[in-house]
Each structure stands twice: as C-alpha cells, then as structure tokens.
Image (cartoon, rainbow, N blue to C red; front, side, top):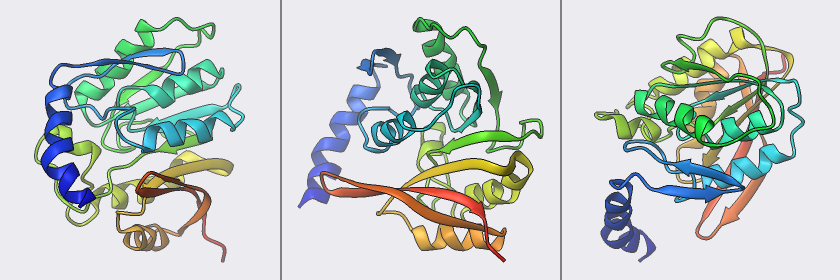
Length: 223
C-alpha cells in the first residue's frame, strides 16, 4: 500500500514541486535546489548523514564529498572549518553547490574546491582525512542527468569506479563514510568493494518512517 501511495500520489507531487526550483531552510542554511539535483530534505538520506557528520571532528581536516548535490554536507564541513573539496558528475549539481555556498554567509572563509567529476576521475590524486559518499544505488543505467543521483549503472559501474579509485585518495587514518538504504542491493555493493580489497562496516543505522538506512565505514580489508 505504501509503495502504491508513493508511486501514484507522492512521486507525481514531488516531481511537480521540484520543477519550481524550491528553496528550503535547513539547519540555518538557505538552500536552493536546482532542477535535476537531489533534494536535501525530501528524502531521508541527507538529513541522517548530516546528523551523523555533526558528530565527526572536521576542523582543519581535508574533507571530500563525492556527489555534492545541492551542497548541504559540503556546507556543514565548511562551517566546521574543514578544508573542503567536493565533486559531482552532474554539472547542475556542482553549480547548485557553488550557488548555495555563495548564498549563505560563513565565518569560515576557507575556499571550497570544486570538481566536475565522474566519481574521482577528475580529482588530482591526494589523501583526504574524511570522505563522505551518498551514492546512487539502483542497478540501472542513468539516461538523463536527474538519474545520476539514483542509478549506479546496470552493472554497478559507479561502485566499480569508486572502489577501484578510492585507494589513491586515502591514508591509513582516513575515515570514509557511505550511506545506503535497505532497499538497495547492499550485498552486491559489498562484493564490489571486496573485489577491490575493501570492506564495509556498519557504524550507524536509523529507521526513519518505513525505511532503515545504514552508514558504513569503508576500510582496507584485513588480511
């Protein structure tokens, strides 16, 4: 019943709402959401991940958000005085994050570094201290820009790229956090990680309404 309610009533209303490029208030931030960009408050993952990262020490840490969307997590890291880099494959999403950084006033004047990038492809190799990933996780191809936030490719191409590239951007103490919902094929994603010598360990979970989400820490697999 809940699935039908979402498909036939909630989803059409959301699509109509997003066409207007709405502006929302979120933890003191004013966030405008461009067309094709993942909305930070209509879905459960961003508020949950944001709350989790509130408890992580970020001051003067090199922070990377992969898939910045409208910029909520990037702005949090900036507010917490991190050295912030963010990327997105969607040109509109990257422009949206830049817009929202400019829209809000920060005490922290450190510049944010932006990359238009398919996962880590266009980011110069360097080591980050904290990496946050809210990935697409449906095993379907993305045919239009708005699907980049949802679809990871029919064969999980997003995760194949992520896990093969990640080793070049972490050091032994890097904290890599990724959020996933129970509706996705978590075991399949874990198998791609394992193939690349990585393991995914649940460090937090939360049930919000009808859906449980998990935050994983990604680390080199123990030999």
